[in-house]
Length: 386
Image 1 (cartoon, helix red, strand yellow):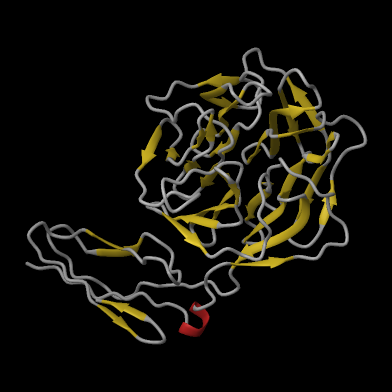
Image 2 (tube, one colour; image 1 turned 30 degrees about the horizontal axis):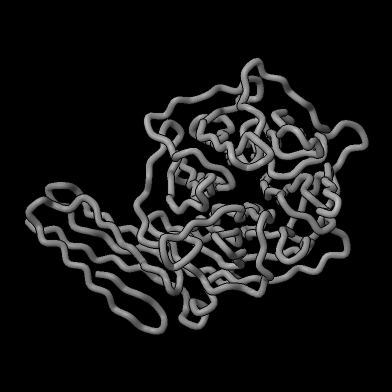
């Protein structure tokens, strides 16, 4: 018995689909943080949080301010009492389970050592928390909250101010104690790469970074227990072997994409956008933003948009930008399959429907000895698959 499938995926009108890819929009602000670099963008669900940063480099001057951008306005959340010391190149993440902004380490005003302190922001005040065991003082670690573990994960970094002592350890933070993990596989020692966490697949992506030899160009997945190297054809940073660090990155839930913006490769600072669909990286056209390194960049669930602030190009930057589409494409399955020995066949897309990107279709519950046939019909209104 041969199973048959009659299903279709309906997309938005062609006129709308042509604008379905994300674009940059600069947002005018009457009040915002001063120009700065070396910060991170972390979403608390309702806005983008950014802490500290280097605001001047002659002489070096750091900030200890905490700001939130809600998609329309910046608000200075810095309390009048205790705050972490001024710094940049720190690690940060939002603990979804406990509603806390977690900050670790970074480079501060000391000329002799990196920082190794742990701080939490509860929405009102800062508290420094001491753990009997913790990661060594470092700058440029990557941090993200892992929904599988219910803990914050930290990876890598650089343990000296000269930028030559790289590490590749993996740690978790539960609000009380740091615990070092021993995954079976792990990326090589590195820093200045960052996590983007996919809450639908419960995994984080880490791209590139750098070590003492220069930029790296490998893509790794963290699944809550182990690291997996993902083979990709394209490598952000260049048309050759690639390699990129000090970029901004986030997971765009609306478009189901990991997004990297800006950063540095050997000999150049970039303003390019790269997007990872779970299989390979795709370079998007460069936007109107100036080139930059060390920006705050993250996706905010309540607005469904990505935001970028600041960074360093030819000078310190203090601009605020939005990256998203105003016309999301969509598809919908309809119709029923005929049951076979393996059950009723299923059909789904493993990717979003985006102009200029592959639209991958997966079929399930097919009989071992049946011959599945997939046909596509195109019009200016919809794509139909049979």
